[in-house]
Each structure stands twice: as C-alpha cells, then as structure tokens.
Length: 419
Image (cartoon, rainbow, N blue to C red; front, top):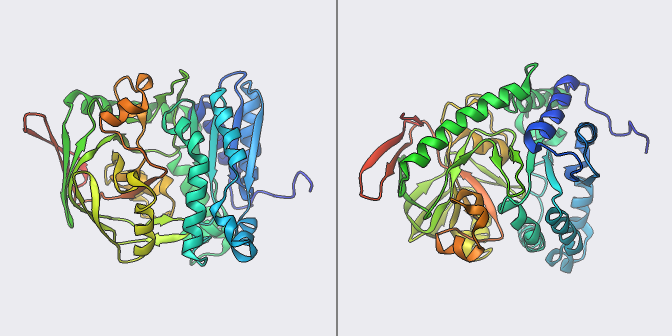
C-alpha cells in the first residue's frame, strides 16, 4: 500500500482539515511534550489521522500509535464468523490500552463509520458483541470516565455516514456537505480556531459557574411527554468545555461541544420523559423513546422504533437502567440551528438537553479526583458498562432548579437559558 492509497476526498477542504487536526492536538488534547498518544479511527479517516500525528509530533509527542478499524472486516465477522466469537473481545488489546492510559498516554478517538453499519445484522449478535466489548474495555473506560488522562473525540466525514445525513446528494457532494458541517460545529472555519475555542470555553465556563453557585438539589424538566425530576448527586459539580484531568492537563474532551453537564443521583430520579431526537445505537435507530423512572430506575421503557434494542440495552447490567449524566444545551445551539440529524451522538447530543444511561463521570464531583469508587457510589454516582446519551431537550422544554429548601429558580424557558 502506498502512502496515498487512502486519499482525501476532493470534496474536503484540506486547509480546514488541517485546522481540525491542529485543534485536536492543541485544544482537544493539549498534548504535552514527551506524552504518548493512542488514536482510534476508521480506516477511511486515515487522512485526518496522518495530520493529527504530524501536529502531535510537532508539539513534541513521544510515540503516536494509531489503531484502525474497517467496516468490511467488521461485517465479515457477522456474515461468516463463528457464533461463539460474539461472546468474546480482544481483552489483551483493551488491557494494553488501559496500561497505556495508566502510564499517562493521551487518547484520541475519531468517529466517522457508517452509523447504520450493523442495521441488517442479527440484533442478538450485535448485543452480545457489544456487551463483550464493553466488559473488555472496562479497565480502559474507567480511566476515561475517571478523567485520569487528557482525551478527545472528533469526527471525519466517512462516505456512508455522509450519504445517511444527505441521502439526496451524490456521494462526493454529501461528503463535502458533511465535512463543512463538521468544520462549522468544530469551530475551525475561521483563521483562528484556537482563539475561537478560547472564547467558547469562556462562555461555557460562565454557565457552569452560575450553576455551581446555585447548588441545586434537583432539576425539574417539563414539556410534551415529559415531567421528570432529576436529583443531583451529593457534592456534584457542573462541567463544560475545557476541563482539567487528573494528570493536570486541561483539555476539551469533545469537539464539538455545546453542553454543560453534571452527575445525577442514581437513586433520585422520578417521573417520565420522552426523547426529542432519534438515537443511533449499534446500527439501530431508536426513536420515540418514552420511559418512566421510579427512585432512579427505569421501570417502563417503550419506543416507536428500536424498542427491543432499547430494552436489551437496559438489561446490560444493574446500572444500565439508571442515568449517569444530565446535560443542558440551549435549543439555539449551532448544531440545533443547522437542522441536521447527524445520526451520531457526538453531534446530536449538542443539539439538545440530554441524559445518559449508565456510567457517571467522577470529574463531576467536588474533589472528584480524590474520591474512591465507593465514595462516588455513596454520593449517588452510577456505575455501568455503558454510557449512552439520548436527547430530551427542545424548544418546548422548561427546566427549574430546585434548591434543598424547595425554592425554585428558572433555568430554561422554551429551550433557552432563563438567565
């Protein structure tokens, strides 16, 4: 294979692609001199991987290690693989990744695969493979969820994904449109993306400071199909934009990001809530989600599409039917205003307020870096093999903050910040 065997689509602006790579290294990761980096990406994203590696080495990276996945190889497993293989995963690989994270290796993930890749495969096999992978990945996930290291996720416009978002366009046109949407959401369209991210992080920080100053005991969401009270974990802390990992490096884990988020109390969520956007999960589109919580646990779960998959997800483990994150995003966010459904949580979660089934983030606690897993659980943090965000916000949602003494403060009105 020659160096140019996987070429960049001519529809992709190479200047903006290079800005995205530089932003990933200098803003997303704030990679340090001498620090190693592990990159996971679909093979189609190799043009971006190469640019990220170059920028990483320019700032003094130690060793950059790419791990590439391929859609055809993934499908081959489902088409001709042995049945018992779906209960297995490459434990040795994930153990190695966890060991790398324990040695302060930074992590960067590029998304870009076809979100519907597994939509035609046997759901039970998809569920089994996902569960096996989640179990194998747990040691590494704990380092990410615990924010032990600086990490970042961003996107590359894969062809199949682009056609899903823009089905009426030719493949090249769709790739170009998705690329521009990614560049816009990632704030790399201008000549100074790093400066743009500095301003954006400052705006998000002002929101988290206001919320942390209020110290709400819970949030009350109301709107069509929704009347939900989410208790907040004891000693919770709101985060958003740039955050400092336990290794002391301040990074932006998600590019793009429009959210401020914190940890709910896993046993203090009550009421019902309806999704406002479809959830693309493991090749299945789950839409029309409607669930009811009692004492933190989902006791009823329905969906107009993908209901069986949703219910299987909730059976992953005890924590899968509880939530580990609540996030606030104004309806006027740039991603929401784009009017696009990206079929990818990295983008779609930044178009609306959302909650996440499963694992909480320890960084969303006061002094979270010093808390043990037992202390996090005692304060209401949830533990699970999964962390799946789904959207519950819209222009019709109101949110009130409820203080410990029962007084209420408007937080959102008709999908926008009230203050």
